[in-house]
Length: 403
Ligand code: FEO
Image 1 (spheres, helix red, strand yellow):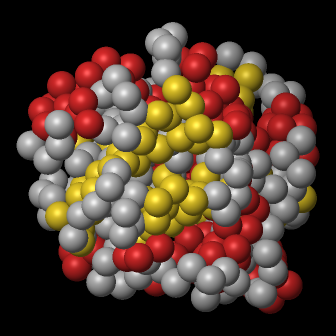
Image 2 (tube, helix red, strand yellow):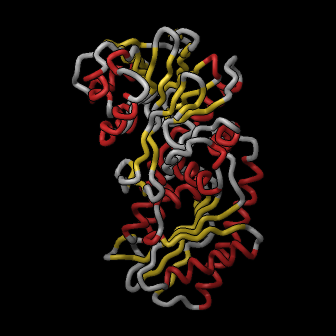
Image 3 (cartoon, helix red, strand yellow):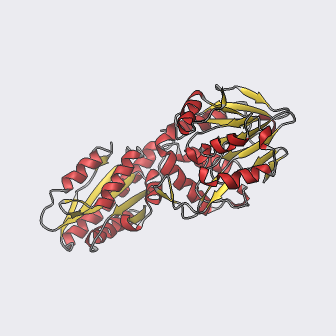
C-alpha cells in the first residue's frame, strides 16, 4: 500500500491472536505496521512484523523489492511484535545493516542469535537514501527503554513505533479517513494497556516534536491507522492521555457472586449521578480489563467493591488492583464497598492494597452483611456523592497539569 512516492506500508493484519501480550483482548484484531522507503540510491525497511506472519510479510515485500538488495533494516522498537521477523528477513537480505539505538541493538541480539552488521544511531543522526533522508529521534521508554522514532524529512513522515498506536486491524484501508469512535476507543484502550506506565515519556516525545524543526505531515505508527489526512487527531488524543488531566467522572468497578455487592455498586452510581457527574460502572468478571483501565486512566475517582471469598478479596478484584499498580495509576481518590457473611476481616486487605497504590481513600467503607439493608444503600449513595464531589475538585486541580 503506497503512502507517498517511494514509501509503502508493508505491514500485516492479525485477526487470529486473541490476546495482545497474552493479556489484552484483541476483539478487533491488531496490525503490525512495517514500512519500506525507497530512495534513489538506497532503501530501508522500518520495523518488521510479528514472526507468526513472516511468510505473508516477506511475500508482500518481494512484490516491491528484491530483498537481497535491502540496505537497511531500521528498528524503532525491538519488541517481538515488531522485530520478530528480523531473522527471517536477514536470511534473505544478507547485506542489510540493522539500524537502532545502542539499547535496541543490544536487546535485539538477545532475541535473534544470527550474525548481522549493525549501525548504532544517536539522536539526530541521519541516513541519506538518495532524495529520502531518515533522521533518528531518541524517544526512550515509549514502552521499552530502547525506543526511537524515525523521521523522513522530505515527506514529513514520522514513523513513531508504539507511540500513536492503537488496537484494531486496519485491513487494506490503512488511512485515517476512517478514524471514528471505534478507532478512538481502540487507541485509548491500547494506551491504557500498553503505554500508560510511560505516559511521561509519551508526553516528552510529543513536546519534543512540537518544538523541533520537523514538520509532521504524516504519522505512521507501528500499530493501527496511518494519519495522513489529519495527524493532529492522534497527536492531540495522545497529548491528552499523557497530560495527567482528568475527565469529570467516577468509575465504579465491582465483583459480585450473588448480586449483593452489585446492589451496592448501583447505589454508589446513583449517588454519583445525583451530583450530576458521569458514573461508569463495570462488573469486573464480565469486563475486559483493558476497557476498565482505559476508563480508570482518565478518572479522578474510583469506587471498588468486592465480596469476601474464602476469607479473601474476590480474586478478579485483586487482579484488577494488581493491574492498577502495574500501570502506575496513582493519585486518584478511592471509595470502597463490599459484602460479607461471617467475617469482614479481609476488607483490611482491600484497604491496604488501595493505600499501597499511592491513592487516597475517602468516605465510609460500606460493608453490607448478606442482603444490603436501607442504611447500607444510603451509605453507598453517600459514598457516590463524596466521590463525585472529589472528582469535580480533582478536575479543577489538575487542569493544565502534566504527569
Ligand atoms: Fe508494539 Fe511495544 O510493541
